Length: 401
Length: 138
Image (cartoon, rainbow over all chains, first blue to last red; front, side, top):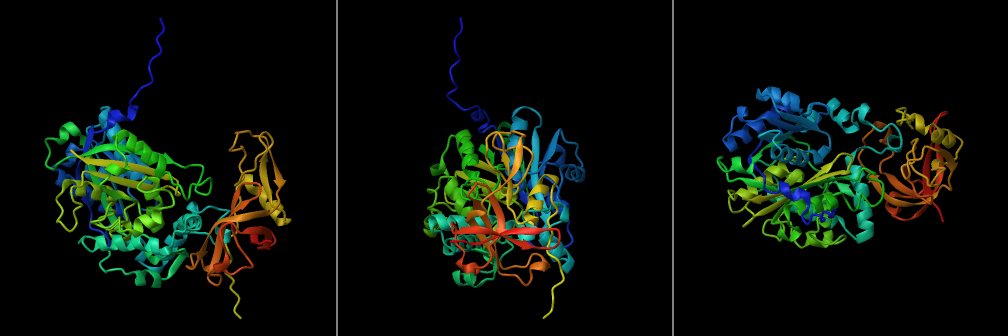
């Protein structure tokens, strides 16, 4: 007798929910750290994350890192410097979406017994690399020849991520009446948060007048719409929820994650105004059994101000096209309805391609910040990662145990 | 007046793009079109991204479209553009569907708008390359 098996009522990804926890989080020195390579910055962050967790390098059997370009970090070189052999280690190449993807991969590997305790991290020495001398500056701005598109770009004077994201910003402004004042509020809110963070790279207040007076880079983006060049690294340590119970810190559970890559291209479809945060977020919400209304704080990948605005819409914190009025309400500020990038983000704390957003999500959920930095009663944090020629996206939802 | 001798980056075409650049040299805008599903695409490749058919031909297109989006470069990323800032780089959506990155000429940057109609013009870079650019059309 054939009996059709019923469609599963619960999505299979649910099985991963709450199985693993982040038990350690650390950063390197941030901002301007001359004379330290990206690799050593990352090792510094990992050392701090291990100390935070009360673990030793010998407890780690997995290393997941964002892939190398130029002098960026690499799992083999990192593991060598940690003095460990790894059961599970690899390098990811999804740009700024890699860091959350590494946590996602860690959860899957641990859940299915491929490793027990995995460190995920990324470090870069971008400030030093671009400011060491004039030659370094020019080389960085034009990107290595091997990475340049050879046609359909440079001949038009089209270079860099600022222009690529700016195209999305212009289209969004056209469709929905979004303004530079809306973008400014994002920059101002995150700067205000950075002023509460002693480790942040940016130390001076930012006013609306400062924002509008700053030179334009690639309009509609001016200087304060663009994220920082930083020497910076971050790392987190993932292990099973069961093991986490015996460790030093209150465990922060991985409740959900999701990824989506709009690999048809940033220029195609509506991809520059409806980002892959939409599907990546839906997958993460589904795994977590949560929705945008359950999120207490968001740590959003802020390579440019506009990218925060559109991702907030795509995650369902407001409707598509209403991001401008949502941010103008003051929602993103500490004390607002959705405190966002509470350490200052990549616009004002430091830029480590999304790694510091994961660290900040963990720290908020531990409730150990002084009251002026703590999101009150934060139980759920959403973290986003975006990159890989603008089309790769990842989402992480963390929760207090 | 000093002449800036620093050259602009020349296209270094992929093999599959050669027909595009050869046509551009003759001031024709041509795109790959699928012989199976009849749709156009860009940038050129040897398999239709809509239906995966390998049967294609390059066909001249109207050269008419509209600005999907644009940015204005104020910062000099490459020395050859030092005297051109501020200049507009736009993504133009052709009537036939595909979107092309390009410059918008004959209009002050502050007057460029999304969805404004544009038509192709060819900028002769050197003996080898003419670059398809666009200007406002009526």
